Structures are given as C-alpha cells and as structure tokens.
Length: 365
Image (cartoon, rainbow, N blue to C red; front, side, top):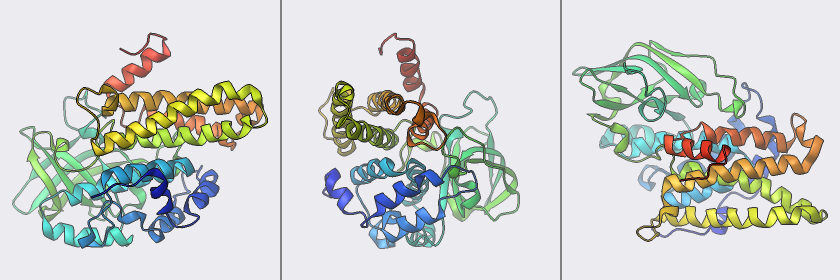
C-alpha cells in the first residue's frame, strides 16, 4: 500500500475540516463539552474509517498515512485528535483479533459512526504498574468473563458504547475484551478535572462482578497481551505526531508574528528546522524506512524529541504574546497547558527520565 505525503493527507480531508476544528477548539474547555459535533465532522469526512478495513466499510489507510493525518488534525484541535486516537486504538485492537464474528458485528458500525468505542488499557502498560495486585481481575468461564476492579484513565468513557480493556487472571496472564458499557456492574465515575483536554471526558470505570459474554474476548489469556496485535503502545510514534502537531501550531503563530517583529526571527528559524526534521523522521519511522542503527528514528528517541519541542515551542508562543497570552482562553495559554499533557500521556519511564534530565540541564544520555 502506497503512503502519501503530508500535503496529500491534508488534501484528502473534507474541505474546511481543519478550519472548522480550529475554530471550535476554544469551546472544548469544559468537561461537559464532549466533542460530539466534531466527531460528526470526522464521520462526514471519512476519518472514522481510517483504521478499519474496506471489507467492513472502512478506508483502510496505512499506519503511516494515519499518523500523518493525526499530525495535521492536531494542529487544529488536540482534544478531538486525542479522543480519535483512543477510539482508533480500540478499533485497531478489534481489527487485530481472530474472531470474525466479533469483527463483523462491531467494525461496520464503528466505521459508520453508529457506535463509539475507546480504550482503557493504561493499567496494562504504564499506569499503576507498581501495585502488587492487578487493578482489574479477570475470571474466565466457559461462556462468561467476569471482571472486577477499576479501569483508570478511560478517555470518553461516558460517551462510549464499548471500551476495549483488559484484566489479569489468577495465574498472571492477561486478556483484552470489548466491554459493552450497558452491562450490569459497569459504573463510570465522574470525569477527572484536568489541566487541559477536559472535553475528552477522561474517567475511571468501576467493575463490580461484571459478566461479559465470552464472544467479546479479543485476545488472551496470554502473557503480555499488549505486545500482541495492532495498536500503538506507550510512547508510540502516533503519540509523538500529536505533540509535533501542537508544536507546529505554535510555530506557525511565531512565523506569522515574525513578519512584523524582527526580534522573533532568530527564535523561529531553529524551531522551524526542528519541527520539519521531526515531521520527516516521524514519516520515515512510520513506514520503517530508517537504516539499521538510526537511533533517532526509534519511537523512544522521537518521543523524547517531540516532548522537548512541544514544551519549548508552546512556551515561546506564550512569551511572544506577553500578557495577552496569559489570559484564560488565549490560544497561547491553551497551547502551554496542552503541551503538559505529553509529560503524562503514555509516557514510558525512559522518556520521562529524559525530560527530567533536560529540566535539570543534565543533557540527554
């Protein structure tokens, strides 16, 4: 499957989609403002079919094209793009399962937007890994999988029809399952009040003796279920593409300002070179075109660089706007708060340590 350039990816969006998302982004500030209208726009533009095979009504974009699409969408609205990545993560896990009946049931409805899905898998990757007891326990019967515990950090939990989540069995193996949210014992907690991206309605889900029909089982029980199948993992290039998209938004502002403010030219030029290089490296990494030994194209290296850039670019944006940018609702203050998200979202320990070393001016090992 051929991949397309970033420009071609932009051209394949519905006319005006990026502009509409950018104009509405400022309204996504309150927990109650779920981006329902934005997802209608995505559906109309065919975006909801990106990761779903054509046989199920999807568009079947390559992973490289999807990542380039995320980058462009993030320049307009990070919240909507973030929610989309979680929805697509659920779709990809379903696509990667071996149950043809489950795929035939869920994927066409996901592609059309008839139903919604998200993922609740951080407890299997980066969140609460220090706890001795698994946060979600799974007991597998002949026809039923019983789940008990709490699923943390589920984006869009109140709006989801299905949550792809997982649990750990008594012998330490793990499962993934498409959890129908209307089952008895599923209780969605109030969304957390976040520093940014409140409209993502990220919440915890309590599971009290939830009996899920076994036909919704996606994978397992196996060891390390998250290492199998499709879907970006912690620190993936897809995550980095959103950080670069947000960086690009702030850099474009600085470039516009530099046309009348010569003092910004020395700041804008290196930031532009850096973001262009990262865009090229993300594209190369996404298609696996890097040469052996090119450490800069590894997912952790790209994530470290993307995190560093988004923090610096957005703060440069704020500094350039002076006091106006410090007022709530200004694009600069929103960009700074959104940039903080990449320090905690799907952030593996090596990436976190690299950030801490940079903050302490120790350099990156």
